[in-house]
Length: 306
Image (cartoon, rainbow, N blue to C red):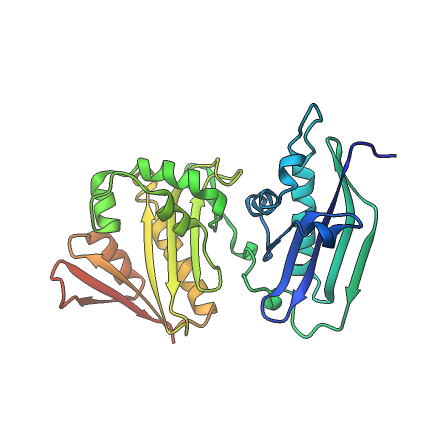
């Protein structure tokens, strides 16, 4: 009944070392012969799902050729993200195959599905090699003028907004935060700041409610922990247009609470001696300010959590 459609395979299985692994590729009865599949670790977002699809040879056909229209790639991406979420939410799932998943310009439909379940040995999120997006850290912030902003974990899709936010910084703000003069933020640096492992790092962005990457960023606070979680380095930046409203204090309180919840022993950060506002904020939150013996221009703010 469905004509001019492609047969694809979408699925996942549990690997002994990496936990759940997602599979996408050219499906049908000859899936093993074609050997045209891509693998990815959950959880997936839209960017990762599209990248996974693009790594297969069948992707060139899916975009359309010789007068045939391209398929609904968003529908394919959505199916991948849903399978990914199933393995995050359901620890009983061991294996799942949708083959074939028929896809054309109007959408996708599954013709055959195979599922294998077992008694779970770990919760769903503990099976994952990559920690999922911690939605429980999202918080709506109401400003004194009635505006509402969203404080949430950073996402890979925030890279365009981060570039735009960096362009709004003054040279003095850049020097106080990055300890050097920078004219622009490179793609590599922005990717390192936005594509993080939530297990060892956390970055909260204060942004307008809306789609990640299309909403304005007003503040960023982050920590980066050692593998043993003994220490974590913090950094914070609140744009001047929202300065003086206590947002820096609030963001620091939230990241410290997260560090304490993760069992991190100590939070520290390097602060220039001339950065009086940052030093005052640290003292207000109970940090101890220590001089740097390597560089007299720097100090180290330290807060013991246990």
